[in-house]
Image (cartoon, rainbow, N blue to C red; front, side):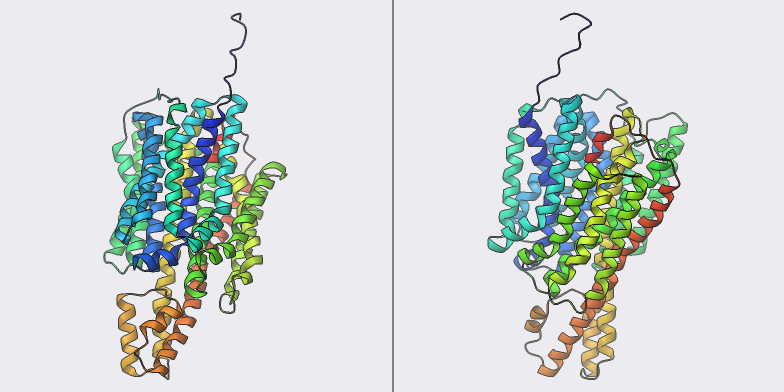
Length: 528
C-alpha cells in the first residue's frame, strides 16, 4: 500500500452494534413498563398512584438535571467507563424494581440511581458510536440504535402490559436486568474514545443546571404530595436557571471553560428546535401519565388492557416516524407544524370523550391522530435542531437537546399529575358540599380527608373503604368520585394540549427562518 492509498475501512462490528441497540432498547422501554404497571405497583407496594407517578417524573428529572454533567464526566473519566457506570446504574434500578417492597426503594434505586445512570449512558453512547464506527458503518449504527429506540417506544406498553398481566411487572424488570447483563458482558468489544479537549469542570455551571431543572420539577412533585415550601423550591429553581444563563455568558466573556457554550443559542434554528423538543416532550410526558392513570384507575384496566389501549398512540408514532424519516418531502418547518397541529387535534378530541368513554377503544382514533403528529416531530425535530451545528460542537449541542427533552418529559409528567390531583381535590370538595345526600358532618369529613391526601382511586377500591358507611352515603361518594375524576383528567389533559399549542406557534416561527443546512454529524441526532 502506497502513501497515497486510503486507509482500509475497518470491518463492521455487528455484535457491538447489536449490543448498543439493546442498551438503547432498555433505556426507552423502562419507563413504558412503569407507565402501564402503575396499578400493579400500587397494589404490590401498598402505595398510591400519585406516589408512583411522582417516581416516574423524578427518574426523568434526575436524567435531565445531570445529563450535561454526565457528558462532561464521560470526557474526564473516559467514555467507556461512563457507559459502563450508566449501564450499572440502570441495572441497579431494574434489580430494585424486581425486589422492592416499598416506594422509598423505588425512588432511591430506580428513580435516582437509574436516572443518574441514564445521564451517563446517553452522552457516552453518542461518543462511543463516533469512536468505534466510521463512515457508512457509523450511519448504519445510528440508524440501528435509533430504530431500537423507536421500536421500544412502540412495543413497550404492549410488552410491559403482557408481562405484568400474565406474570408480574417484577418479571419485566428482571428481564431488563438480564439484557443489561448481556450488554455488560460485551464490554470487551468496546474501544474507549479519549477526550482531547479542555478537562477543567465548570462546577458552578453544573450546580446551577442541577438546581435549576431540579428545583422547578421537584417543587411540583412536593406540591403534588402536599408538602410545604413549594413556592420557595420552584422559585429557587427558576432563579438558578436565570443564574445559569448569566454565569455561562459571564464566564465565556472571561475566556474560561463553561458547562455549555452559550454561543450555541445564537443560532435561531437551534433555539426554535430546542424549544420544539421541549414542548414535544411536555406533550408526550403529560399524555403518557394521564392516559395510563385514566385507563387503570378509572376504567380499572389491567396492564395488558392499558397497553393495548395506548398502542394506537405508540404504534402510529412509530410508523409515521419511520415513514417520514425516509419519504416525507417538503420543508422541515412545515412538517413540524403539521406534527404539532395533529398532536393538538388528537389531544383536544380526547377531552369530550373522557366522561362518556367506558372503553379504551373510544380513544383509538384521537390517539392515532396525536401519535401521527408526534411521529412527524420525532422524524424531524432532532435533525432540524442539530443540522446547523458544526461537527466539533454537535456532541455538546446534542447534550443540550437531550437535556431539554428530558426536562420537558419530567415537567410534563410532574405537572400533569399534580394538576390532576389538585383538580380532583377541588372538584370532589365542591361536589361534596353541593350534595343533598351527604350530611354537613359528612361533607366536612370529605373536605378534611382531601386536604390531607387527595388520591386518584378506582370506584372498586373506594367501595371497599366505604363498606361500613350507610349505603346511601357510600353510593353518593362513589358518584362524586366518578364525576370528579372525569373533571380532573380533562383538566390534566390541558397541560399536553397547551404544550402542543405552543409548539404550533413555535413552528410558525420556524417557517419564517431559512431551512438549516445539514452538517456531516447530523446523523448523530438519533440519540439527541
